[in-house]
Image (cartoon, rainbow, N blue to C red; front, side):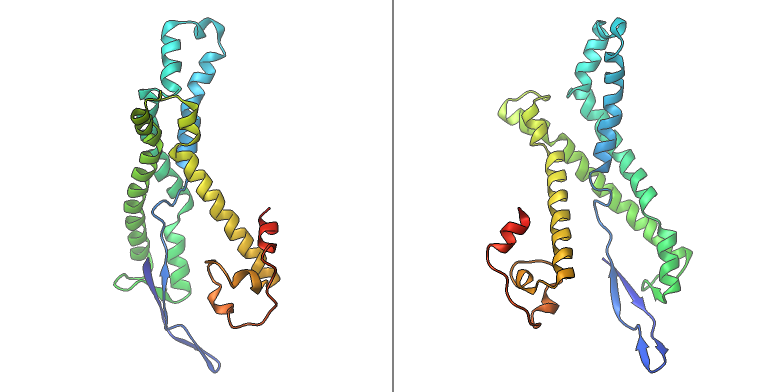
Length: 225
């Protein structure tokens, strides 16, 4: 969390700013997209060679396709591709110059950093280090099925390892978190305080003192279904 201080300003009889907020930067900012990109690129050569009958039967082609379907070369090239695509995705989606300009326009600044270009350079440097850690994390999840398969004596290309691998778990957790955010958004729009009074949904503590009839216990089950 990068602290952001906003300057005080008076509009009419009201005073705004003066408080400290935080700019959250994710370690895994790119999510699962680098793994998807890397696996898609690695699957293209084997798929294209398999479509050519004269080349598909060649021993070198058969060996190459076997390596690209869960072999050692697949995971080595996949790890390199994940690193490259992680920085590529962050460079496309994260714009430190735009963030620095928005902070300067709204009267916000990072303590110890001058507004404008120094702030953009600071955010870019910080995000570069975070992306390196996030790329290592994604690479570990990518090669996780190989390590698990070595422990339980399963081949690297086993469908069980691919289904229960780190990539699948990352996608599943991301989808579940997104569904939880969508459900909470719908509950907030409908003012269903009965649902939000229980559980650990974010942003519910400021609504505990408000009125409202509690929903039945089975209502949330029907909603999820």
